[in-house]
Each structure stands twice: as C-alpha cells, then as structure tokens.
Length: 168
Image (cartoon, rainbow, N blue to C red; front, side, top):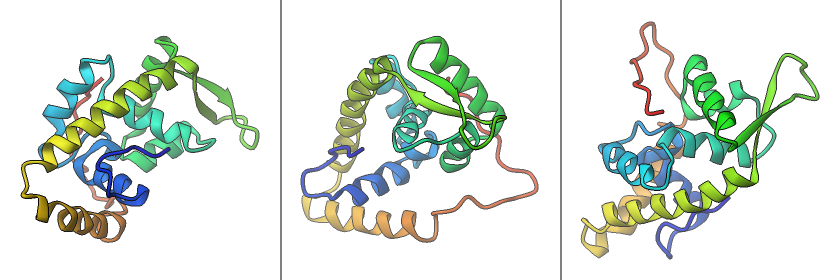
C-alpha cells in the first residue's frame, strides 16, 4: 500500500522514509516518535498499531512474521494483536500451512483507521521534512533510503536487546 508523503517521492522512497522516521519499525525512529504518537492518538491509533496493520495489509503474514518484520518482540506483538482484535480492527485466522500459526487480517474498520492514520503519518512526515530547506529534502530522503534499504535493513541480534516501551 502506498502512502503519499511528498509528491516527488516514489513508493520505495516513501517506505524508506517511514522506516527511517520510525513507523515501519514500530515507532522507534529518530526523534519523531513523540510527535507521531501524539498525532496518531488524535485518530485513535498508535505507531505500533499503524505499523502492524500496514504490514498485515501487504499479504498473508503470521503474527510472528509481522513481529519480526517490524522489530517487535513476540509478547508485545500478542498484546498489540489482542488490542487490534478487541477493537475490531483485525482478526486472527488460522494459517493454511501451519495450524499453530495465525494470520493477521485487517477488517474494514481497520482499513478505515489506516486511511485516517495514513493521512496523519503523511502530514507528520511533511512537517518534519519541511524543517529542511527545499533543496535538501530530496537528497536527505535519498540518503535515508540508502541506509534503510541497505545497512539498516536487518535488526541486529544482541545478547541484551534494548527494552522497548509499549506504545499501546
């Protein structure tokens, strides 16, 4: 699903900006998190919920696959999924290939929330990027894209991973 952040950006760049600024990495980005969290709260979403719902719309993914792709531990993912399901934004369905796994499917209510939260994310990104002179915005986004799609594309395993606070 494409999110319009700035008109001259392509979809892959939009996704890179999201990841670099935090939304596709569960709201853990570079100082944008508090602003994004506050802005998303106005439409009834959290950065993590937004991120999980977006990933779930991209295909048939299990809770574990979504958690791994957005950088959430499994316990946090279960809490978020429980909340999404309770609010009618997503449902768990049995995986056709692994009866122990559950696929996360976004409901119509979840799609409606995503439409509103996409606008918030786009507006927030535009606001953040507007702090740069116009001539620096595109090169900045290109540099972020290179980092996010290259060096920062995978989470690094470590003995004591940083603790992530719950935004849900």
